[in-house]
Image 1 (cartoon, rainbow over the protein chains, first blue to last red):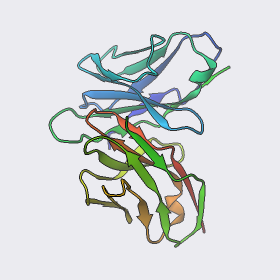
Image 2: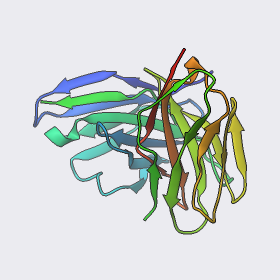
Image 3: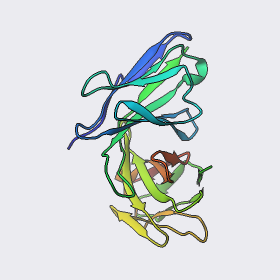
Image 4: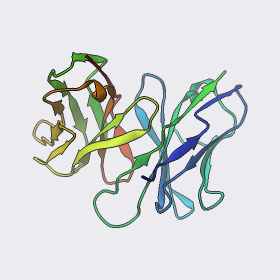
Length: 116
Length: 111
């Protein structure tokens, strides 16, 4: 069964460093998403991406964040200068495009980011 | 804006016990409602969904009914198993594509 994969599973970095979190969405999906969950808090939407551009983003997704689809398979989230409060579990998701009230979002296992 | 309030955890039950995890929401319009489950070391998986009022979503013995009058979508299962131990997330989707999640409820089922 196709699945969303994410690497690495755990990333430790120093404050101020840049990190890139990687995701491989399901191959025929066209919408891609990043969510995050700070320990003990809710899963929060960050950004959605379609047709090589951001389609929606939340207030969390400020200038320190960027997303990219560098090739036909990867979808990345970059944090330019990490802060302590960026420590969280980051989930990637993908869904089919098309009509219908809902296209199921398939989630990856997450990357745990720890900023020291 | 949209929000989801979920029963605080953790919840610990014995095998074959009855499970209820409460979920209420605030949203404009007519959202779709979901329960996701996360098993240890895995991603969020869609457990069940309901797209309009009075719909009942069901899967793997779990059920939830979309109650517009009480803005609720409580998850129930009549007899839990050890393999149901996981984190359960209630979520809604409004007019935009993103999901709004509750805080998650850790369920542990003891043999």
